[in-house]
Length: 146
Image (cartoon, rainbow, N blue to C red; front, side, top):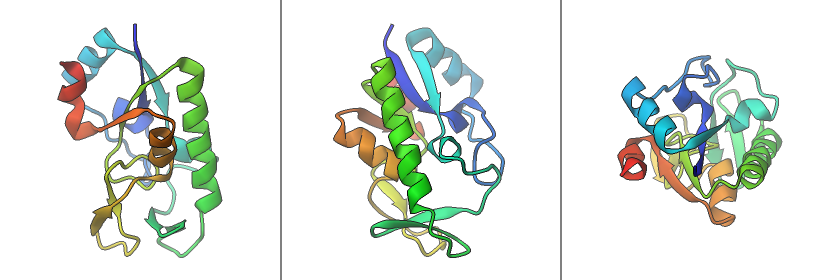
């Protein structure tokens, strides 16, 4: 069975910045579990950041909390953890939380905390893409269920 690296929040883990989750609908989760061995990861909590925590956004070369704290090192550590898990379990695909400063692929928030999206990847997504994983956001779940 193929393995799928997946953002833990999409499985219902309460690791989101506000202590919540972004769980996929139960029927989608059931289909994913039928087709893949799921390998959950939250790069942010894996780096030691708590849940809840201050929201963060990417700015060129860094990740900053809404309070101005530089959390780049934590996000880098979380990205390395996600990559290590993908390599350890032989994941070639990842289903990640869209727009996240860790997991967003293709677009992320611009660092102004105004919900403005810009082209780019989150820190973990960037590392996973560079390692050759194929990345999907949660809105693309049907693509990997075909």
